[in-house]
Image (tube, rainbow, N blue to C red):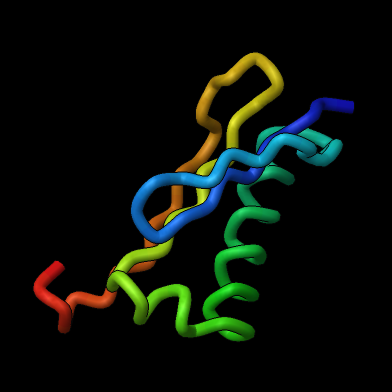
Length: 77
């Protein structure tokens, strides 16, 4: 099963050093959307702090599979 890393941040990305196994790239994309939604629901301050929050998923070989960005455009972003 492929291994994926979920890097997150509100500016510089915090690199995930552990990662998780998922079925395929499609499952990694879905997990990224769900993760971003959970962060915005459970910790909205992550977005309001700097006006941006990003989730980037990379494969075990370092390829970026998906990058999702939530941006508060009222902050001039």
